[in-house]
Image (cartoon, rainbow, N blue to C red):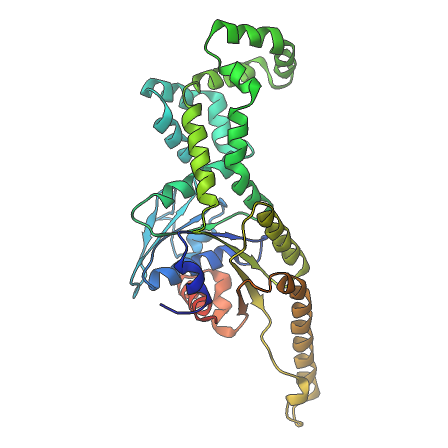
Length: 361
């Protein structure tokens, strides 16, 4: 094992949730952490919630061997463990849950063929986030893996992912939902008496057929809600276990630092601590222009002065967050030449970045 900061964080982790704003290299850092853990002997699954193809690009997959909703083994020469990767497919994950909790195959088929279900299973706000949490839970219980690394969408959506199980439970327990799925004639009369004016208004907006499809879906859902509620509880428990680690990735620009601070605030409000901050793509320390030999041309000295000033500005931007998380481990990743390929997301670059993360003290 590397014996550095990353190893200390991963040693007690079963799940690592990587969060941060867009454009800070979060996907690449997630893949690099997973690769380093596999090299060190862990059996790792790295999953991206964001439907972009950057994880597949990062791990060197072409169109002939795509990464999908099921884990795919990534060849990693010299690894003492295993590296697997997958990209969330919301619809497939939702289908699997319907199959799991439907009392019969016929009921599962009625749900899957329902037009309302076909729409919400891939497009409704919040569905993707809950199914991402569900996929995490599934991988957490998979004996093939002893570590799951989750590459989340940008910060605000990552928070939706963390709160999705609780939202699902609230939805299932909502009184109107209980009335709509009620199998008795009393329940159906309650819908007619209490909700019909509302339903007529909704029908005028979305169309009568769309409303009928929605009501048919919720009634077909009868009998699955208890299973979904318990599953949501189990998923939420995993997200808050002591072996679930939260890593925040940021650059040294003001907006990503603000997003990182916001995410950390939200975690703390849920009683969850940030285990590691990765400050990515930082300016290296070039020293001072005063250290340069006197015979160096003035333009070169000026360039060096600009680089030194940029590094100082980065340190100033990061300082409040560093001060706030004084007890939290940090890893600095500088823009040194051997990591420039990280922008192109090649597997070789992923390994190099992983070695840098793993060697950090």
